[in-house]
Image (tube, rainbow, N blue to C red; front, side):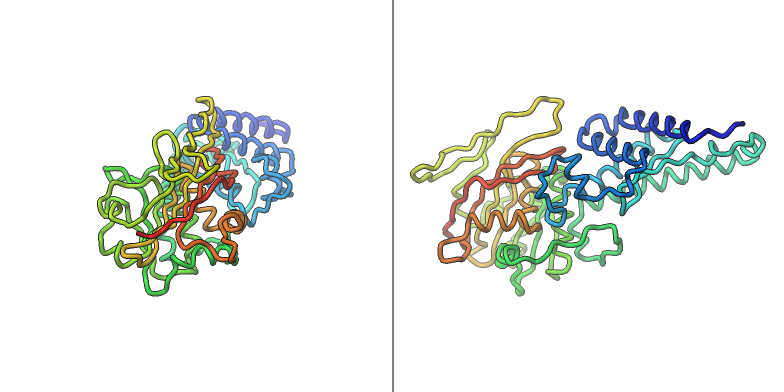
Length: 389
């Protein structure tokens, strides 16, 4: 049997890329189709070795030239999700494909490998090993599937990473502890109170939204070296001792949990089904911020509002931070403000008082542009100071 030439391999690899792009795993994710197609083309043309996170941000995500990968994690987040989608494809539709496409961590180069049973050119050898090769292939797929499940679980329960030493060099380093981030976190990282991270749950106890889970993952990385006593719970399981003894960070939509409703916040901005209500507008302030017009059904881009609320705890002790919004990307946008230096600085500059200090309690409204629920642009809109009851 004649071995394929380099040109033949390129054609076969291109065909495999097209097959993956048309699969169910990628059909509903325009951003990951674009990213995978871009990286595949660069890899097949021999240009992938020189790719940098900055270049990918400009070429694929249309970031401005001022884009700083150290301050924005959009490329890293989507690279991790792309690896999950490739694993999902080979666990399902691509289980019998002859070419295995991979995206090793720590680089932007896509690799193409023939399965062992296909790469063997001697029919006798293939026949003699036909019992071992399928088992090996099946084992590889099982491991890939388990890895995908593990990654998904890590995304949903990322806050638990604060209890485990990070061992993978491929994970992005925590953001620098800038003066603005210190100011935002100062009320929440009180040494004598644990930090309780509350994830919004449905009545059945399931987490709501991939974006909220990714926000929890980033928050876990950020807090890993900065706070020892951190606990995670679902909003349906939050107890009164948690509220009384700890500082709270809520990710997701407000809950009907009676304990949460007992918190003494006096909001000025309130999420409603159609937008955000300004309860006590002053001169020149809008009374209502309606939801932004929806994009076409096939679009993966959406625009919405995120709402950050920094409120007092029970009897004015401790603090409660709510990161929510009119769409599922809202909590993740709030997390970026509290974990990345650029968004943190932009918000702090807007809410800082004339005396140079931040308000003790406040609400901040942000406009969020997201792709596949992942924020790619966050803009300050408006803020209000709050008074404790």
